[in-house]
Image 1 (tube, rainbow, N blue to C red):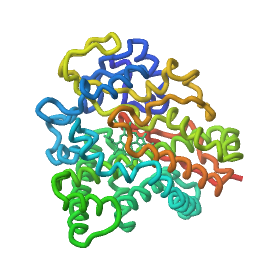
Image 2 (image 1 turned 90 degrees about the vertical axis):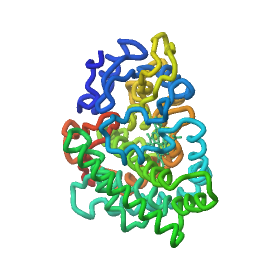
Image 3 (image 1 turned 30 degrees about the vertical axis):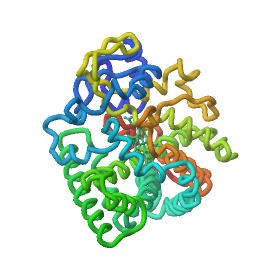
Length: 402
Ligand code: HEM
């Protein structure tokens, strides 16, 4: 059945609508094969996806015995240690870890950061063509803003950013064995780097969330040294990659249709609704992490067995006509907008407020500085990286326009 859709194909990543329709025609929950993970059920409707994500007692992230679902046996051990974070944990460990950082991502804290995020976006927009024209909007802008913001939040030195960019790029090539080796090399370096940063912060103190983790560690009992490394690793990766693809995907949609670009730039009070629609339509994260079925269960009429694995297909939920009218249309004024781009349930994205503000600031700064920005190539020449589960535009060459 699964082989109805190749999740790693550029065709599916470029435009998931046809693949989603094919899968949905096969039922609300479909047995399929996913790269690296292997045999897994995927949901094809909004209801089925929300059901899996909300029922965290039945659909768990750990197998009985504690191992992380979805990591193949051949994966190097240190990756298992890095993956030991709140996003791969069930209760009570999940809440123990999430509570430590929750405050920093609340609406108020994020609103306080907004002027600063705007200032970073303005500076990046000013420098867009500093290396020449056309500029690659992904590397020169969409990647730099979320990375700068999360590094500052964590308290990581600005001079170290090129390391994270190299590491983020190693993640983007996860399409073949060579790409996989590159990724493992990148993760290894990253882990060593973070261990060293934590060691320095313990010794010298510092600002930001890493210093806060060290403070919590000193109180004792709430977080282990390995969990601190994997927490920072999660925040750094979840906090930058996904938002990069939201920004580049949104800019691409606006540049494909200059009338839409002009409509948005004529009145920035439209930006918040527009970003909500970009979140739905771009669906930067196409699937949730795989969940493990704790006991035999009926999911929307489909019988799943204890031990099966299931992934909520967020992009299918976002394109479900039962959830939104005309979901195949990009409607920047859509309201209400029911999407699962940030997941739902206990693992609902910690950074959702931050991502939204970054999306708004990124578009406003970019198009205020370059109101006539244009694609430097035909839109059909834009490529998506073949990284299953994440929709990432490889390069987006732009010119300042006339
Ligand atoms: C969880 C999407 C931005 C941090 C999630 C999940 C999704 C998601 C779908 C749930 C996955 C699951 O249940 O399997 C996105 C998208 C973003 C974005 C689409 C941008 C457009 C961010 C940012 C941060 C962040 C800026 C900041 C650090 C996290 C964390 C979790 C998470 C820590 C795990 C929460 C938990 O397990 O309780 N995100 N995210 N995300 N996200 Fe985001």
